Length: 372
Image (tube, rainbow, N blue to C red; front, side, top):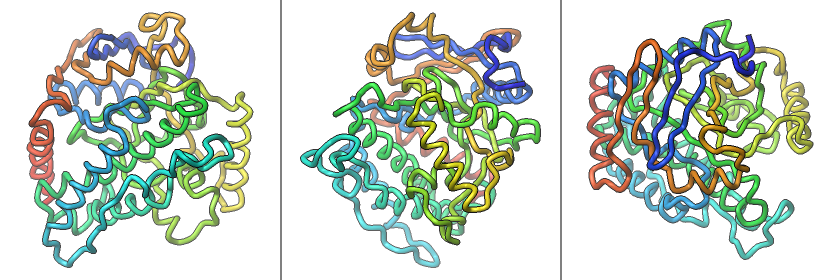
């Protein structure tokens, strides 16, 4: 059964309460949809902490701009550098805004470098994270010995890297084609358990592929590493090397977490997307990968859809963006139906103690999983 089959939804619904808006989510009636919803309810029932500092990516008007994010990144790097690892880990140099984005004084547009993302700094930062974190199934020796503050700082290398990438791309798009900004909502919980995808689930990657629908709800990537698609895009279709291959992980896990696409719908009916996908398929073939191999997880599994009509009427993308940009804070998530469950998320990033809340909760997870 396709993950995107219209109007074939589970009876239970998800309601996400923002500052002044409410989002209603319908979940597709698939075996994975049922298991995923149970995992989400477990996160709510266990009152796991929502990771609010990694929730809203690609919002050009966010207070978490490049200056803010670079300062946050360097604060976490200082924490990592101060820890006495055994064996020693290299000293990570501080980053500047110029490391991540070309000047806005350069020509801005499809052919210009102005405001473009500098991928090299992001790739370098992500490699530091992978060295220090390890994988979901094999944490690194550095991560195992780190104290809770340093574990938290390591986690932020990845979070902030992706947030910088998204913000820079949005800032550039806003300057010359704002209708193609790609804002999203990443709804993750600290210490959320992961579960293995079942064989039947992998066909869902092929059903949706890389289409993204405004208000679409997608399975969250809950492991460390890059997908083949990310390597293709970030490295401009590189020749595969041993180093690049070591970065790649095909998705094998799911969790009770989800992403919402708040950008304009993109499918291969858009000529630029079709061109990109044709290039990606050709690159896969050149490097010995089979586009039809479902275990390569080539795509995004669409698990549900925001009821856009009830939330926004017939609003255009830019109208939706305007309504959402002042609502970037989740206060409650509840599941209605045969078994009602919910959780409130009262803290915000304006709270003085939001980092302490996260570190203390993550510490419980580290200790319960014998990570030290």
